[in-house]
Length: 482
Image 1 (cartoon, rainbow, N blue to C red):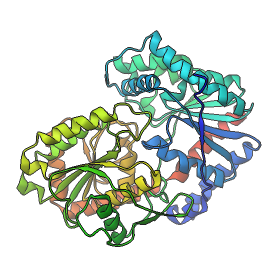
Image 2 (image 1 turned 135 degrees about the vertical axis):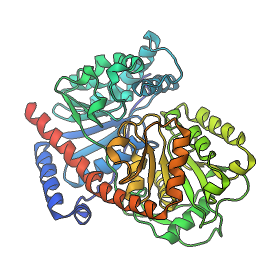
Image 3 (image 1 turned 90 degrees about the horizontal axis):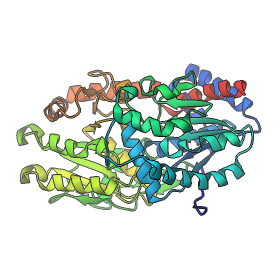
Image 4 (image 1 turned 90 degrees about the vertical axis):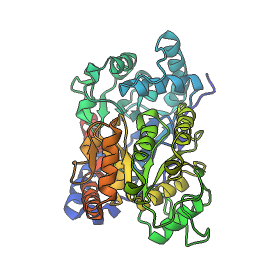
């Protein structure tokens, strides 16, 4: 295990002054004051964020902007990604599912699994302890890193464990209690724990040390930056997701550091016949290939629309290449289940569905493809069975798209039903899901009103500077306490 070492992810500095035009001078001044105060208290200290992957999933996407803006504000913030083994990631995926109240593979969490978990983290901790100094702040993200809390405390650091996942009423679920029972011995030693919503906090973390910080998006990233219709079309045609000439327009975008990028790779697409045309309404869900995102249900519910109700609409189910996310071993099996379900559809339904595995070799390129796909969507769907916080929901809201999403977990904090999106009270009710799609696809005025309200709410509540200010408040508390 000694060869397992965390790797540092280089994050470019990002200025925060560009937020002023988006949120207004008063809100910007208030949040800048909070951030500046925390930076002053951190003088001489390093803020270490530690996660399990640098690509794929919402946590990895939030880390770069959060750390880049902190650096732009004057903090010495850095990002490390732990190394793991297949056995380790099988255990952590099991924990991920259990904390959502989902049985997953039904596997054990006994002494063998604890040994696999602790041995990997012990090897990573050796390298971390050579870097972390007394007084530093270490923010550990999700179950994959929870076992590092004791070692980081022994280094003299202030330690925060940040949990991005969970379910409402975790202590009422036998499955969730099983996951928390495994993690409790580690997380109870943290100086503070952070959750995406109050309802996710289990009893073992609810002793005055828990805080709530809602996630946010970076509006300037390749995933969310403004794109012209010409660029959207060129990217989607090149990626193989729309029909058209391959040389139509520029495929360019800006990377996080402001340098130019271009979409050069295409998606691996499962479909019948040709891609949809530019003027074809497209329903889109973008997510990992994960049972909790219910891609099979998204497909089957869409197929319940009759040809006359579809208005020629197509569905695009998009996610990363199945080997592109190191800490998600379930991806290939879920992708196979989706393609099997697609093959079982009647011919007329099957030709209206595309399953797209998006390239992951260049994360910024992947993000630009997702950006174009969401901007082109007539409706963006997130029909999750459980969700800590739906970043894809906020991404679509920021782009002014109407969203149909499950009223589970943090999504209920993002959308007010009927005002800035449509919520599904039961994500397993495929008829209700199909009805919501029919309602939005059939009423352009409703779609426009939902999209406009969604963008305004995202602007007010879910942009990165708000999240950075929330972390700054936590830093102020912790530094004073130490």
